[in-house]
Amino acid sequence: MSTDLMEKIVSLCKRRGFVFQSTEIYGGLESTWDYGPLGVELKRNVKEAWWRGNVFERDDMEGLDTAIFMHPRTWEASGHVESFADLLVDCKQCKKRFRADHLKEKKCPECGGEITQPRHFNLMLKTHYGAVEDKGSVIYLRPETAQGIFVNFDNVLTTSRRKLPFGIAQIGKAFRNEVTTGNFTFRSREFEQMEMEYFVRPGEDEEWHRKWIDERLNWYKGLGIKAQNLRLRPHSKDELAHYAKACTDIEYLFPMGWSELEGIANRTDFDLKAHSKASGKDLSYFDEETKERFTPYVIEPSGGVDRAILAFLADAYREEVVRNEKRAVLGFHTALAPVKAAILPLLKNRPEIVAMCKAITADLSRLYKVKYDDTASIGRLYRRQDEIGTPYCVTVDVDSLSDKKATVRDRDSMKQDRIGVDKLVEYLNDKLGGCKKQ
Ligand code: ATP
Image (cartoon, rainbow, N blue to C red; front, side):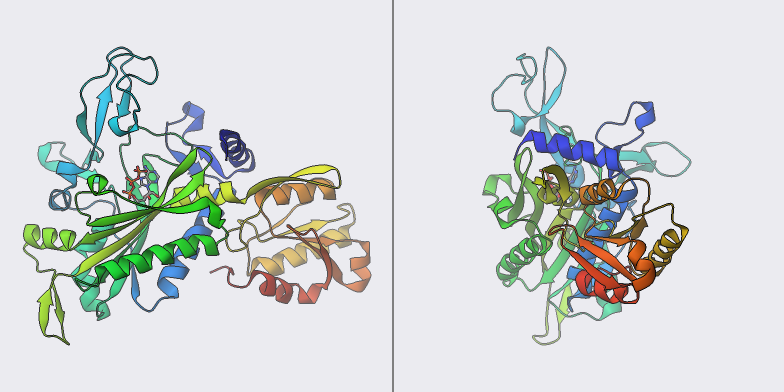
């Protein structure tokens, strides 16, 4: 893949309303992004597919939604205050700052200038909580959603009456004062995570780690990501985070090269023990069968919503020539497509045709995100829908008025079916099964 593809995706995202630069009218805020009308639907669909696959369809997972603000002692106990840092170097000449592990040589990659010795730079963003701005009111924007799960371990365990192994899943915003940003939404300072903490008996952790790596890889493949664009990268011992015994990244072949899409870590009992010690609240587990009390180990599949979206966009984008005409297509899996069907009148100046289209739109919109469009010729309308990944286009023509049938065109094969208007819901349910509006 190439940077050319990245440029095409960035441009398509802006032009069609998937992703905009944050606060664009003021010149834009670097590394922060807004999701537009189509982007917000795509994002909802990605999160929905994750929640469905990992929470609804499993009998060993509970959901949770915790606050972004947490007691500051959380981050001392978790080790983030001390060690959630990157090693940075500054260029003495142009004053630019770089991550030491991103440099190939010991000089500035921009101007060739001399660089400083590496220094630790904490990635947590701080603000003040409450009316008084003093040292005691400092609070952090959470840099990961995981800690909200750990501090609620006992609340969830007792209210859900779970037995090991079981997991807790959460989707939410996280914030990191990243130094090296860029590559569109790949690394931003405000982003969303989809994380699970899966609690197991010590000794069973390595087996569960392997199972979760397979599960997560299959989730991406099941939503259409091509197998050849995914690979696993186990971490070497010296790059492991302070809490991890092992970690394997799922990498995707992004337009800029292979990069982390999701990390699956074996966090051992580090976090539960650290919070037990710091808070005084016992976060251990009593096993009824063996009558033993111990602190569970935890496997953490941690993915980014925004990175997943970028991967789904890059993987789905294709250009092809059909009947001597070039078309750009986002071949999204139907569960992810922002718009499931477009309803298009062949003649917009025939009120009966428009009325029939509007009735179909109203009917389908009870189940799916659909869109009526009559603002161009039918060829243009099809191209527009292909470019945003709409799997089906429903067209109403003069014959429809007498035979009460519409033409349904498939995005990928471009095959057309003539379907009774009263059978459209059934037809689309069959084709789109499993991605109905919630
Ligand atoms: P990287 O080394 O690429 O900065 P990381 O190893 O620090 O990532 P984790 O702490 O493992 O990332 O976070 C889990 C997931 O959250 C990542 O796999 C990624 O999908 C997502 N994520 C982390 N940081 C960012 C960010 N700054 N912007 C967007 N997504 C992120």
